[in-house]
Image 1 (spheres, rainbow, N blue to C red):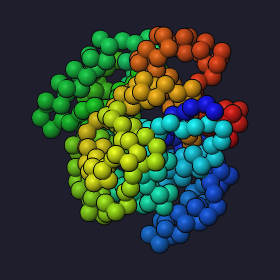
Image 2: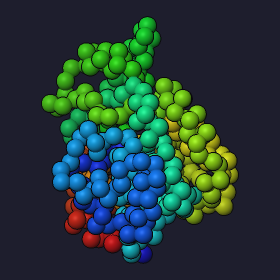
Image 3: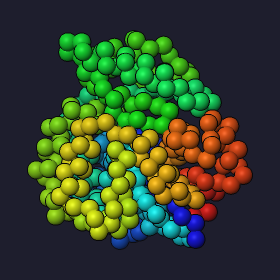
Amino acid sequence: MRKAVLICPGRGTYTKTELGSLTRFLDRNLLAHFDARRTALNQETLTALDSAASYSVSKHTRGDNASALIYACTLGDSLALQGVEIVAVTGNSMGWYSALACSGALTPQNGFELVNTMGTLMQQSLIGGQIIHPFMDENWHPNPARKAELLRIAAEINTRPDHTLTLSIDLGGMLVLAGNEAGLKAFEAAVPPEQGRFPMRLANHAAFHTALQAPVAAQGRAALPESLFGQPQKPLIDGRGQIWWPRAARKADLYDYTLGHQVTEPYDFTAAIRTAAREFAPDLFIIAGPGTTLGGAVAQCLILSHWQGMASKQDFQSRQAATPMLISMGLPEQRALVV
């Protein structure tokens, strides 16, 4: 049986292409439970959101809607896997919450409580914003000097009065920066446009993984009890690249990390994938749905980790064409390989 690392996506992955996918793939009993919880909280049900006549950026990208939709899609995909042995689970940003459930550290229902609560709190506060910018070129050649220069620009902006801008997510060949409006505008003014779309603001995203989220982290700890958490059943890789091993993880530590460091400190997705590759040497890296946008970032992480000698986009594509190692469940033809 092929060994695989399961990767859970974060915000921004449920787009108009994914509309309708949740009700096709998620267990009906789980969906009914999630809908009932949303109804009790006077929130629109996931069924209603997913079966809407059209996709609405203002509605479907809101934190209180997007987080729960993405979690439910990811969970449905993880439960559908067949013919593979999951040797570790990780995720990007909000995908950490999904990874907790997919690893068994949270039940599906408790995972929903965590995701829906934090997504709602983030939306209610909506502190700051995020911007994304590449440091790799379009052929995915590593460029550590460019990365250092972008981080230097951000650090300089962060020293200015009334400006906040820091690293939010180390995302393969991209840097996700977060801060207040002054900091974001200053970065947009400081770097020339690249590839026709960068630097790019992320709609309805707060300044995730920065100190600006400390009030949200405190609200999350007040609203969510430690008793929701348990031991992971599969090795779990967090946003520092640290492994939480089954039967060896203290649930108090897992709770503290999830509603502390993970909310207010940078999330190193590149380190998480590097750990997954080097420590578990899987045959496959499986990206759960929704969407397919995380595939490039995972491939870039593997290149930066020097995985199997890859050093560019062409190297990855050649390796992928010969023996696929990256499976995006959002692509029907790839999904069919693992369900």
